[in-house]
Length: 510
Ligand code: 5AD
Ligand code: SF4
Image (cartoon, rainbow, N blue to C red; front, side, top):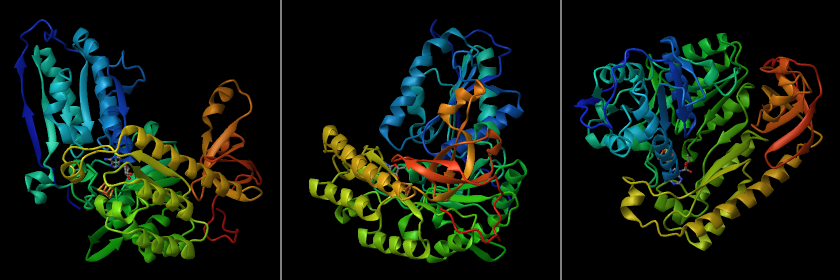
């Protein structure tokens, strides 16, 4: 499929230095040390991976030390206000350093860049460029441009962001990720054996509280051909598990050579890629959980029995205010199909507490929904009013923070109890674990050549820790569980390392 450049607005505001504070020295060289801070979802982690890969090709090397870096990037998130505050305070800490060392170039990318654009320059004048989610391929040229400006004693303000829906030019929002995504930086991955693959961008659901449709634009699915070629490259690099990414990943639809491909079709195709042993996908939208998809997971041993399908709230009135487009009854019907077609499948959820319209009674219904649906885990968020969303326009954020906090804690307590109870069911059973490597607490012991605790995930996405040889990293290993916590299964290896054989008659493990 041909690549079409995303329409960009590129504003340069070159202002000759006027005050001592904004004076910059003439700079001709720099140290190529790159510091990148990423907040937000897996999409952002993937974007950072791609940007770092591109910059490495150009001679940059990563550093964890922001002070020594002369190229500093922030990949930002706008989903909650807290995430934005975090970035502004990191930027604030850099203000003095940037003034002292004119070689420093600072860029802001991601959702905040898309949403706030020039506001970032006002709040953080030391920022050299702001680049939106669809223009990340331009990062290296923006860095170079900023350096040239610095060397000419000019303060640069580069803005590269795509047109949002507000511009009313939907047709002009085309994707730039197709030629960009294959760039990869293995060091930025969760582990050498796991990689994210974006199969779609954007969202068309417009939940009333959410900024994503305006920061990531409309839903667009990538072609199966592009996706498969990327998965093949990843398999050649030793990746064993791919996680397919999309804001509403199960809404995936793409017509290629006259045939409509859905997520289930894509799973079948990826299943045939040699070397890939596990396929996951996040995040699903409840109304798009079609039976063909559940049957594909049932029939494809490499597809994990794990679904992340946020319910968001347990009360129909609140779901209506949220404009989620389904009721608790609809969700129940989906869960019944999941449990029938995929026995043992884990489901996790997101919830928002303190959304406008939430009463004490409706909060109780959210608690009840965790008990009813027995989620593997839930991510629970306090409602954060986001300017520009329907919820912000129409409703007051009137629930006090202490109430949101209390409700949040109550949700967590119920979820923890459920998680622990359900994890306890695994005691005495065996699970098949994709070994990720040494667990965090074992890292130090490994450095000192002591015993190793490994960590991995079961087929139903539970974290499993067990003692073993780090050589097992990347393999599928069978572990018997003898203890649990609400978040972790603890066990020991039962058989030698084995590679998954989809045609084998091994019992289905969780
Ligand atoms: N306030 C709080 N939580 C939010 N989320 C999205 N928007 C908001 C908001 N304005 C949560 C939803 C979503 C997750 C990624 O973030 O639960 O599923
Ligand atoms: Fe946001 Fe709703 Fe789209 Fe999820 S489905 S990204 S919550 S608008």
